[in-house]
Amino acid sequence: MKNFSFQNKFAHWVWARINHYDHNKYWKRRSIITDPNDKTFFLLKLYYLYYIKKTDSRHNSSFGTTIGSGASLRHLQSSFTVLMV
Image (cartoon, rainbow, N blue to C red; front, side, top):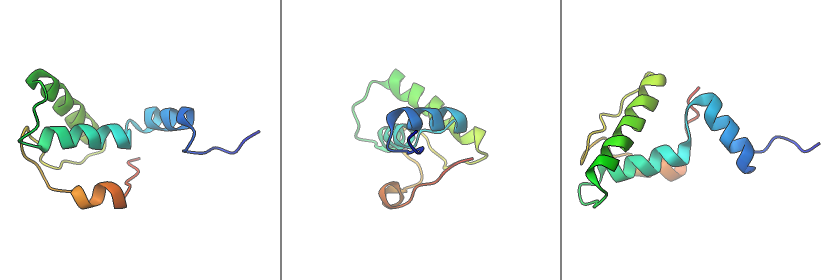
């Protein structure tokens, strides 16, 4: 039997469901929301904002994310991974 690895797509999916947090999905959607020059459809941005707020509330956090603005955490996205438990 293989060891559990986060490189495995199924293991990543299971871990994301257990913790209600998918690191890649969260930061991709957050970058679309906070970029004022992004041309994504407005209703899709509202859905992404809902996902971000729901994820933040499950983990008792808030980055002040709104459409077109929010805390600038660009340097943390690639160098720092937070496991929200």
